Length: 248
Image (cartoon, rainbow, N blue to C red; front, top):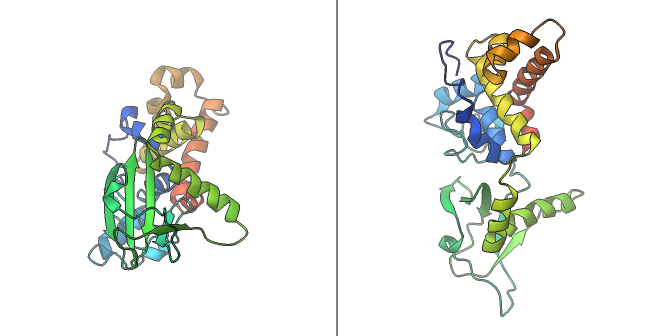
């Protein structure tokens, strides 16, 4: 991404997947573009636990993999991660844990402490941190961290657990068919950031995002278009440099 001859950032279609990413996935998209993080990966790729906490990760993740393929293990866990533990006092109708019964395309890893399950359902990601004490066939319970943010944490987890309901998954697919303004903003921000990292000028970024004709007509010192491009680039640089933590 630091190659000034790169033209990978020109096609807007290459960024369409960004429209369907949640907060943790967007955070990864900004972090993986950080030149310092990319250098840290090159230095410690054989021992990915080194320096990981500096970036808010338990293990370093390969920055060449975008959010469709990468499954970063954030530290601490984002509020939307569902914590799963054995139920010490199960009822007669308690559900039994069956890992492979969870819907979606699954990715499973062990981060040294517990199993981390990432399951892709429609255009959403369900993330679970599974206690090592939990075995297949055992009754299980969900845990929420205590504290002043308990209501927000529960709402985040409740939204994730709704994805386990097939009917709700279908309704979510319909409801998320059209991207919102925030998703569009992230898509343009990442494209503008890539252009800057590739060595393009602000005008060059504007021509790719808005078209050569529009730039020829509206690009002057105090134009709204020029200010918009500057804001996109500045926003991308801020999120890449550490602001991505807010997305978690």
